[in-house]
Length: 319
Image (cartoon, rainbow, N blue to C red):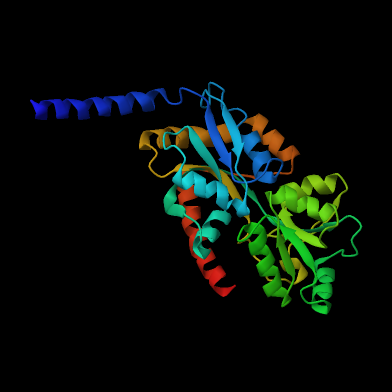
């Protein structure tokens, strides 16, 4: 009799799982952003999820919650260890950020801690200075850094995020030592430090810099990517200015769930979210904000994560 009851319990559990996935989602969803409100990740996350409640999307809204701190570590540590694994708590990922942090150690997560759903954007790092700065090119920056070792202060969103990786590459390529200052609050705080004159320069996201430059608050001197951006066609790449800096710091952004989330829920999200990103309203808002889109499916993100893991292991070993 006990065996019959046990078998019946297992059978009912299977039926419950199937019904759950079939009705998912039945209530609003939360999405955690590991950076402060107003920065590029937060700004873009709110845009790409704004149509989630539509019938042709998830049919339920997605609400953003911010857990900033330590370059993303606070949020991702919480997400990997404490977030519910039921599909109702998602997170925005930033690559190379969380992968580089896991390689350097001191965190509770790695690519094995999460399941990617889809990628929405690819945002290059740029070097910026205040609107009244005497620097007008990367050559000016390098010349000052060589004449004043360790005295060129510049901000970024944290340690071993895309900003920091670009900074390390610039220092290595130019053969100089600068003073990188990670800020609390992500890209928005790093941008404020440049605008306020608290630092001589900064590395930030193209999307944040695009909006700040349009407002007349900063100058953008170079892009850490292989090609110029269509958003900033007059700004040369680092390579064009003689610095051997590639695209390793380009910030890929997307959505993930914790490892252990039911596979049928993952499948539902993986089939729906990329189509949600393709909404015309989303594309229009992203373009207006200077936010480059780069939509990738779950399988494409898996491949990207693996490739970035290999690239960053080699790069960080050298730096």
